[in-house]
Image (cartoon, rainbow, N blue to C red; front, side, top):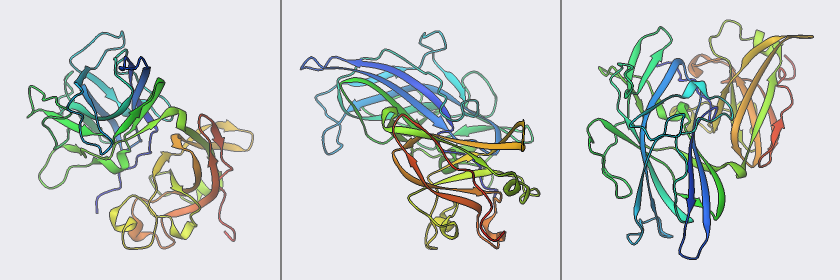
Length: 337
């Protein structure tokens, strides 16, 4: 069984900044767009972003043929257009974001989007997408989808990968959108005779930053110590109130047909400097939608050998409000342990 790819939803962010304005009725909008990552069992996950294509859609989601498509180049750190922009998603954890472009004019409305990347061969060249594995092995990073999107067709479809997001809305005024790269769901390690890692072409949800908050929390040291022999330390985020017995992981065979619930996000649990009561172990979920959540701590990447389930300890009823950081209660050992 392949090792579980350990990533956390929106714990890394790549921001694509765009200003939108100029609809027929005089309304204007300013859009900030970000893509975010989750920590994986790799040292680096570098995507060479090329461009973004967007097109306004009708109420049923079909492209509005009366509206032009927009092909947006990425920008470097100085705000200048560039052919490629490499982003190591692991460098942008939590609620951090790396800006990709700014000042693009669009009319308010509903849009579809595709993000174009370079399909990498593992060379680490400036135009390459690649992964650095834990043993320092460098492999290419690719997506199997290519071709046209929103009326735009890349010049080199063979070496250009296409990532499709959910339909999103640009409102009049300022907008800050985040595309969630949940690597636990979309990053796949090499299989068979393939020598490269793969990004799924879909599964990138867009959220408005004004509609989401964040969660910060701690895991008790005695929970961590009970997992001392394991090689991962993760917090999983579940929607609603979920009992520890029903908390599963991201694997399809756990999430489907077993009655267990898959998490919507995960975050690395990391130690900080020694504090008065010992080492502090913390985690953060960024860009979480408003609502109530449960959080579980896991230290196993193979549920088939976990006699007591995937989760070692958990908390429930964590409430998230827009544009606020929720301080969750400490994850303590389950009663009776």
